[in-house]
Length: 126
Image (cartoon, rainbow, N blue to C red; front, side, top):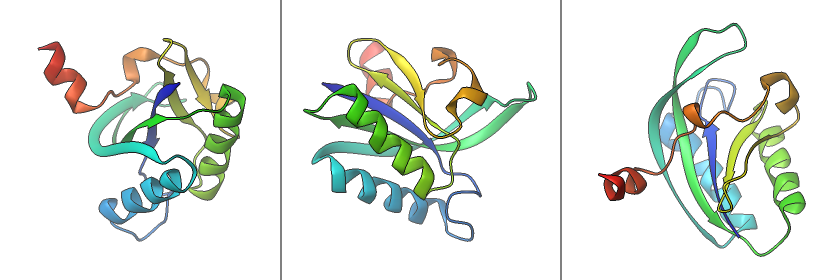
């Protein structure tokens, strides 16, 4: 199975660190669990809980894994806890999109409109 995750690299994630250092910490953590992954930093935006559009910098990471979705989602929950995130957006290769993390319920349902795909996908679609 494959998945793409979006992890916001905001001020809650490792305060005082640069965006690049935050990204490296996140990708290194993910690589500790999943050998086959590649990522990039993308400038994105989303609508927050107050219906405001927020500009964000997001780690977009493609992952290949052999376990169950439940195991994968437990790892995403741990990632959120370590980097002080409410949740991460996950898009599985079967088309299912979810929010995974300790506060995912407060964000509502997965919204593909705000999901960021790797830049290679956009190049291939052009």
